[in-house]
Length: 176
Image (cartoon, rainbow, N blue to C red):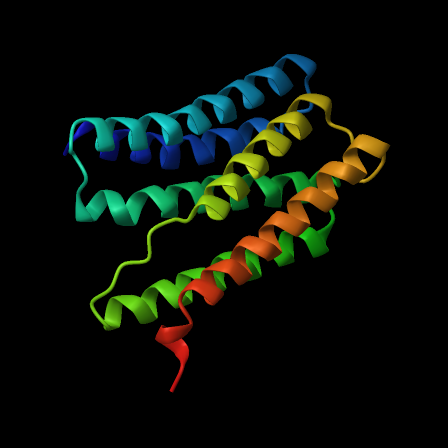
């Protein structure tokens, strides 16, 4: 197993730790949960960088990297919803987009094709990670301030738009 794949697995293994930390109501623990989340996000950048730089791209890496991203983002959002920092409708929108795009990727696989992450998908993931990190640090409900409203609208918009873009770019897979 190469380093990019190890980094993706580290991202997955951070999820239970973040989940446990978010159950502890302590100012110090708040910073630790944010630090663990930030570390997990950094592994997302590093695994892609190392895989491309050293030509270490593997089939397992193509699978685990986006799965690790989705697991990290969605599990943390679920905990933030539990803490009443993120509304359920936003989590449902993000989950629906992720499942739809993954379904499209499965259809592509049955036809021997791979759908790589597009630029909008990368912007979406980066934006979600940054806003989640802010929520972990501030612990203020997403839509309770003007900047939270802007961030929430941005996340909803880029999530929806990037999902629609995947389908637009891959219409040939779903046309009869």
